[in-house]
Image (tube, rainbow, N blue to C red; front, side, top):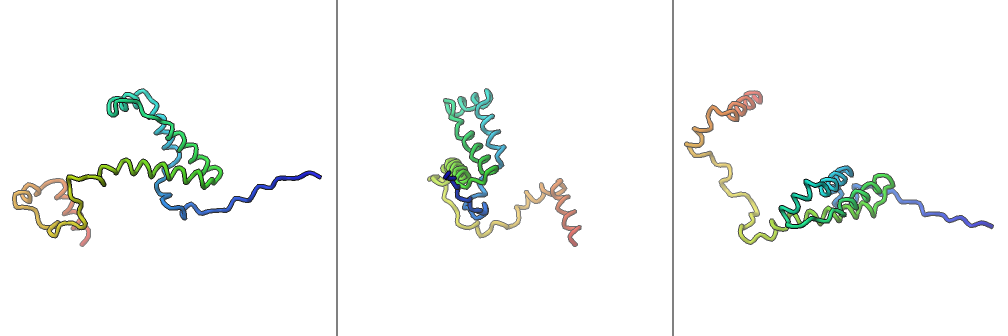
Length: 141
């Protein structure tokens, strides 16, 4: 009597139900980022900016996981890409959030839409933007 291994059927999960799925780029962009990271130009830029060459392996891993999700609907692979993108986003925005020089606003200033000073209004007249604004207003009426 031969035994057959049955693999459990993969449950269908709508990718829109996964939090932060909007962070995931098209898979080809991860491959492009990896190629750019490994290129001579990319290496020169890294050395100039950071003083050393960066590790490009995460771009390749993200590409592999993205393709695994695209072809096999592997949800854990998608979650790994989301985790990687979240980390990248955090590192990119950290200087903004940990800024101790500027005070972050909760709302815009009260007079944010007050008219421009007369000198600036005079300079604005007869500019390309002024003509286009007038055309737009005329077409709306």
